[in-house]
Image (cartoon, rainbow, N blue to C red):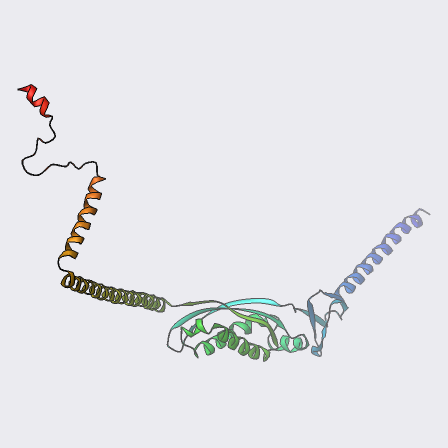
Length: 286
């Protein structure tokens, strides 16, 4: 009886252990058979017997055969990429350009992308085709045209990059040149050119001012000559009376000006220096 009573708990524990192990194995198999594709993502399945499957798996939780199949997750949302390029212009000047791209994969072609490029497709393709297109487009323009015709240059770069990216099943939503700078030699040449233009404008101003001063001097001389002629004609017609009248008017103006000045003392002419003394006081002094 005692032996039979002791075997029952042992049997119960053994069965419980087996059940727990079975549940653990089942849970592990179930977990290995499920995978989740989050929002903005797609999955490509690799089968050990059939290779990469042609169908792309959408969002949600899906089943797979453990060990036989493996999912590879792709982010299909638009992502920014920025890179720089040092390119030569048509007039042999070096230009530094920064290009920004907004790219995403072609969802229907994800199996092909995975087979040919892998999951890091954008890092492998975009920098190379971006540099290639930038160098090809910039070589068609002179250095100054990159500034004056920047919208046209951006349009050419955008169209060429969209065509090249389509060959790799990549969709470009936006392409923009965000920064443009020239080499040190070209910048110095532009600065010297601006200084020369400013000097030329200053020289033009000096020449124009000298011309205006010359014209003013001619007009002033002509006016003085005309005035002298009129005075000469008037003098010949009426005699020296006009000159005497002008002398009197000038003396009147001088006298009016001197009368308003407090520091001026009027001294009589000749020997009449004591004109202002009182004769009575002089007699008493004697």
